[in-house]
Length: 253
Ligand code: ADE
Image (cartoon, rainbow, N blue to C red; front, side, top):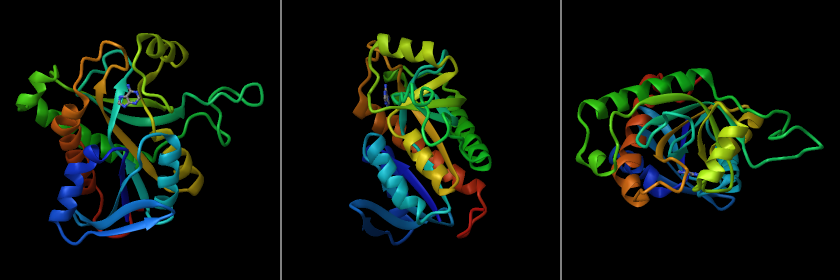
């Protein structure tokens, strides 16, 4: 059983449509957290919308980690690293919570015994392969929406993603993140919380995000349009590509 999560319905819309098209989908609610159960590309899947922010992501991840063999998160992020541009995909090889500061009790960004949570290597390799495939397909045949959204020649990056309860939308804040975390590629609002819960639960996880903006005040982007035109189809292709790389069946280990 593989759980697929995104924060917003628009991010997961095409994956939800694919699950509904491939068979019966049942709706469940545990501790107020809704999720769907169905089949996708030969796998039993749970599909969940976490909502925005670390607390919502942690609560959703707790419910999913009790029921799934692996948890995968997709969605959007703001690009921080040099060369991380709108339309690129960033695959996490580490996640941290940039708004956690327990000094002087513990080092900066330290939670539950670590600073950086590490995704499962095998799942991450499969997700990276799916990301390269998606990006290559869009490079070869760019949809009309790419031109309108200023996206050209997207690429895949692998590295650090940071999460915090803040939509980063000023040069000042993104410059500060770059100065504090020189290897940071992208920022979003859920992934490291999900990573913390899955790590504590011993459940493998992986995460990939499509870059929707540069996390600064120059982002002249129509976010809803980006979600429909880019983020949703990317999430669909990433998830289907990932599932195709994994052996079909119930057990992902
Ligand atoms: N998700 C997409 N863009 C983001 C940003 N700039 N900050 C936080 N989360 C995001």
